[in-house]
Length: 111
Image 1 (cartoon, rainbow, N blue to C red):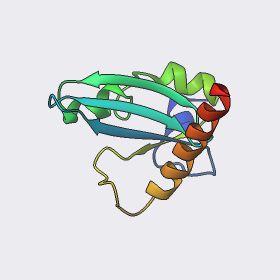
Image 2 (tube, rainbow, N blue to C red; image 1 turned 90 degrees about the horizontal axis):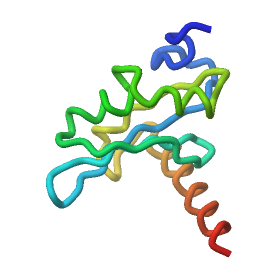
Image 3 (cartoon, rainbow, N blue to C red; image 1 turned 135 degrees about the horizontal axis):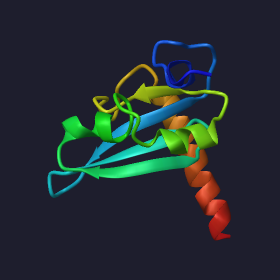
């Protein structure tokens, strides 16, 4: 399988989604995070500027794809949510569902 078909943002054949978000930090930097739709945190990276999140999290580069490929070896869709505001529309509800699964799994691990 080619790298393009594995992680293409344009090929939407019901492949599992990996959501890429940019969390602003108090010091002006951004924490890029990748969250699989099943709630698994896959990767993160501290970025000096928001514009670097897309590159450093693999949206427009091959960075971090080894983590994405390991989790979804049959392919995935990267979903760029780096410019989505907290109450935006579109795929954000799917990201929030994945985030809730992640939090539920963390609570279970603590018990």
